[in-house]
Image 1 (cartoon, rainbow over the protein chains, first blue to last red):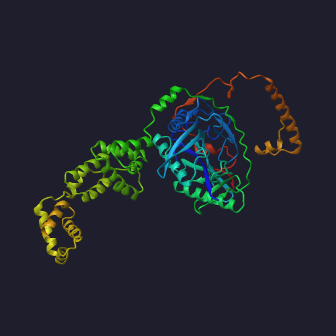
Image 2 (image 1 turned 120 degrees about the horizontal axis):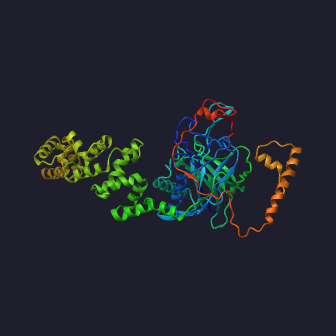
Image 3 (image 1 turned 135 degrees about the vertical axis):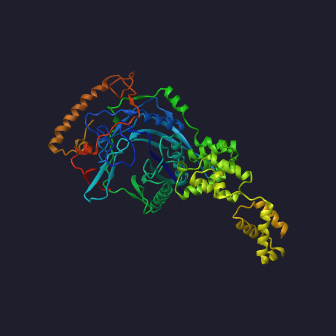
Length: 474
Length: 92
């Protein structure tokens, strides 16, 4: 029998606010343990949480960008459970009346557009962090993260394959980064992904029993974890077994999902409206104001890059994946660069150099106008395309202008026929055997001669003139 | 509505003896019965409310405030090290 997977994804995105959701403590990552807390976020009696306005705005911003309906009336709820990283014994979250509902994100898989519904987006506070290493009889708790604002973004079970799930995550991350509401760093935990997975025979309408896969903490593992889980479920069913509803943890070292150990307690969160926080009433005016500040989103940008700059879809896709990359590109165009040429340099040399250092565009010394200037030097014939690579690398490393580097290193292209002719003569004189073979019809050797002349002129000879002279002389 | 004291005690991590269970059970049930009186009211035309105050949108700006020191944070904890709260090992 053929099976298909049904996948829904829950994403927890840490919002890029300076302070926590209900108090003024810092959200900075990596500080000394338990130094970013206060009576509100560690749940001392008698304190009163107050909502961070920015968290609400960020959630609305994300809702608008994903086509959600923004709730005019929204409220917080208490989710009750005990765990050492949860100081109050309840998490302030949203249950009924979440801030955003009924949105949609479009992804492209194998050239086909797929729509993934967004069920809801709600705000909640993060829990602290438990540390289990070290002393065998104890666990240790750091509450710096307790109270950091999160958005939970819940998708409809519209995803049908691990590939689609990975594309969905990529798209969502790109959008959150464009919106400036989350840094999207999965390794540091500012973007977390849980997946609900079930299988059903192709053609069946009802959903199968689902398992929840947690702990997918890297982009690399979204596809792998889901592939494993789908295979596992198909195997269970084909061997006559039954899928049970459970939480499974992805173990990236062993490449498997495993049922969470420990007694599976029936969760009964006893949600009720949070009495410490008053309801939110979102006026149309606020929605309009936020809508007016939305940036151009990746889909719109990609379309514009194709239509305005005549870029191939492939180039446009890569260039819009990060907002900073797209902006860099457009700056270079404004400074006079030819779109496809700029794109080639960015996707080729620039990407290679950044990858070598594991850097992103944010840390790039090279300014877009500098690339445009260098391209002008190539057009004018001041430097050859080959030398340009050396110049580019030097620009990238030092942040200096192309002009300065060319002068400093004496890289100006030699177009003087007399000088090149000398070199050509020398190469011909030094390689009599090759000359003979070339004359006997081995025309591929022309490349060899060009290479020798370039070597002799330290790459500075104008290749067009070299070619012409060689052809004439041989 | 019948209430299970045993279940509620488990969720609240409270040890309740059989005798106590019976006392609490009848007390909780009489509270619930009393509250059920509210259902006799006709609330058809009344907008549901989730808060007793007629306030909404109380918010603060995203402005940093001083946190308390690590030492102060840990001072009331039943058990801690110099940097962390310490709890019995959590089985993962």
